[in-house]
Length: 216
Image (cartoon, rainbow, N blue to C red):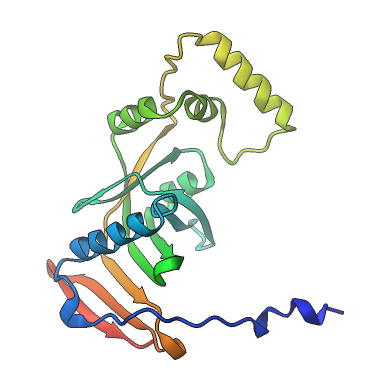
């Protein structure tokens, strides 16, 4: 029998942020995202770039995980990973995804959906070479998402890599690099009192962004 003190259905929180109004929105969703992203960077700089990446395999079975936003502009939103990872395999089968930003202190969410493309190797190589040495070693020795017998195996591979590349010039693996999500849809969500949240979607139709208020 479940412990009654662990009943999560009884947990409540109230949203107290000010509202979001259509007249205040930018006509350009990238500009609107930039405004909110700047607010998030100011409020919680360590967590502003965290985003949930949702993918699905060719059978439609979903998977979600946290990744870090590394670049965005009007071409899309970028992150880096091992192409052999679960997300990489999903995107090879079904190159479509959604990312979700949730900024707790601001009571805001942004969802962005669209097709995904793999970036040129040069982009991944450039970012790889900017990473700290430990991060480069971890990426180089790991076949992300593949089983491993124990942690000692990984630590041994790290030690061997450090010895092999004592000068720190570790080459970027060809199996590691970046992806870009090209937005077709944005949704901006602002928490409001009594769960009467403000939600606005931007949908790309005939080359124009159409804005609609959504029911909470």
